[in-house]
Structures are given as structure tokens and as C-alpha cells.
Amino acid sequence: MFRLISNFSLDGNGLDYLRCGTVRGAYTTIDFGPDTNVNESFSYQRQYEPYGPLVNTEFYPGWLDLWGHDHSTVPTASILKTLDQMLSIGANVNFYMFYG
Image (tube, rainbow, N blue to C red; front, side, top):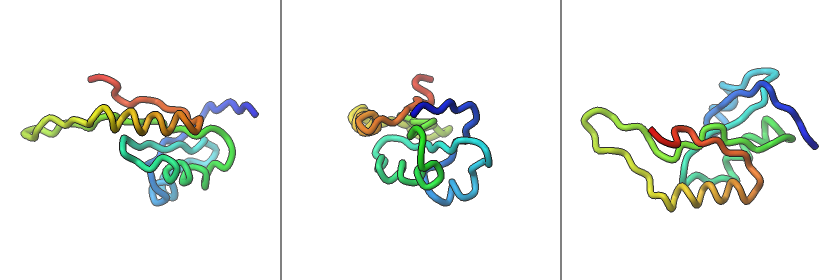
């Protein structure tokens, strides 16, 4: 079944985020980064969107740098493992800050 989604909300990875962040009439999506339990995370989305695509709207493969702190890095293997898990269950993925 194909469903055109023109309005969506992006919410954090957890039921508390979804309880307080969803928007009526907008398709609920979630975000998370590497080393996340993919099945558990998408089970949260399914509680609000039982049908339709699984969507990680902001898969962040890194993290921000804070002034005066060491440069933040994430092992490539962690990124690839989590990405592979999402793709293997047919989830849609948008990289947030692929570079820069």
C-alpha cells in the first residue's frame, strides 16, 4: 500500500518524546543515531503510526562539538551497523549532517 505523506513531525526516540511531541494530522517519525536498538525504536513509532513507513528522519552519524572540548567522533562501524539494521527491515533513513 502506497501512502503519500506531506506533513510529518519529528520526535525523539522514546515514548515520552512522542507523548509530548506529536502533532495531530501529521505523520509521526522518530530520530536516533548509531548504536541504537533499531527494533525497539521503531516499535515506539508503531505505537503512534501502526501503518505506513518506518522513518528515521534524522539519523545523526556524529555529534556536535562543544567549545573547549575534544572533537566528537563516532566509529564508522557503528554507523554502518545501525544503518544496515534499518535498511534490512525496510526503514527509510535521512542522514542529518552527512558532512559539516
